[in-house]
Image (cartoon, each protein chain N blue to C red):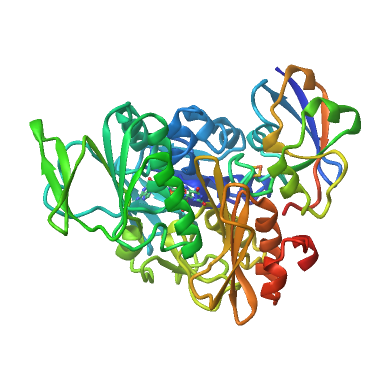
Length: 106
Length: 410
Ligand SMILES: Cc1cc2nc3c(=O)[nH]c(=O)nc-3n(C[C@H](O)[C@H](O)[C@H](O)COP(=O)(O)OP(=O)(O)OC[C@H]3O[C@@H](n4cnc5c(N)ncnc54)[C@H](O)[C@@H]3O)c2cc1C
Ligand code: FES
């Protein structure tokens, strides 16, 4: 258990509770955070769960897979710390993490 | 003091479209009462895992739910689950429920989805013949998938093939019977069909094309023992899965006199011919500004896009449905991603070689990209999405030349 803070493009903050083992996409969706649709349910198939992890937390989120990289490479607001939320499994070490949401999804 | 009563919006159905509509309405802070009535005992859930990870036993039931039920209820939305809507009275603006109660509506949204097409043939009521549409169906089928059993799948569409892939991994003997001359004929081109045929046969699935089923043979205790074929042959079976497509669920709409044509007819704002009734998802034949013709689609993308369009319509915003359809399927280590509708193409262009390492087929009509199917090549799907949405004219040479970066074609 712990907290993850999602910040929308217009700076609206959503403080959410998570359980380790879930994914960033699922936590956002379960909390109805606007801008994260997760339409394919986490299959890395739709690209509607793009998030930008705060710099200092990026190292905690694991590595970007090949399929994820291909999907991300086409998102207009790609940043250095971009991830597909469904590909980031949450660990206890992420308690307090801040994640920014892009203005648009794919 | 004027005590203005809130309007009530009732949603019929509890699938992907209905669930996405609930979410869109709560995110838009919709001011009216929202009541969802679904005959399933579950809060809105996603069906794709039913033939994939949930069938394989990799995820649990609660992970299928689009959201925990409490999220809707905390936002004031009501869920009446396990209750069937039996009729619509458009003049009284009320619906009749299976628990004998009635419910008044100001706006009604039909999200009744589709039901499986049944195979009407001798023996079709034998035990051991399965269909796959809801959680209970998958639970029942999964229990039967034990090593050594013989599973015969009638229908070589993507659902049948996803089940084949899961079942063969579990040590089940799998036969797929497809009446057409190639797999997934309705949704994809010949290159993809050939590729998936090779994939399944290499994995040990006995795939028989051009094979029509005429009925089922009975064994002990009313259980199915085999499938009979049009050529006079038969295939022994312990379990049968019939997966031959779906039919839009339009009974309520038809009985209420709404315009239907193999689907509830709606415009690009998801409005039926009754201004107080909208319809979304698998149950609709709809206008999408992206196409000239009316469409009926069975996909998550269509369900969610129409749900979001309906939310906008209910909010009084005008946001027509105009996005290109997309789809995915998982079989073995292969992820197929598709965008656009390929049926009317006049040219196909292959990029890469047809193997697991990643390739794509571009479908063109008069030089413009109208659809893309990508196997383990997400970049082709993502680029394809833009090319299709823009109906971009791209030379076949550029599409097939792997020295040219796909991104540069946009
Ligand atoms: C096994 C399987 C795998 C799939 N895989 C994919 C995939 O990989 N990708 C993809 O894009 N799509 C996939 N699909 C298709 C996708 O799931 C559907 O297109 C989507 O579910 C449509 O959503 P819907 O809400 O319109 O309809 P449904 O999900 O069918 O929901 C309709 C709901 O309405 C209820 N209902 C109907 N009539 C009444 C009534 N009178 N009263 C009360 N309730 C009623 C039904 O019980 C049901 O809960 C798959 C479907 C299945 C079955
Ligand atoms: S939810 Fe579809 S790519 Fe992440």
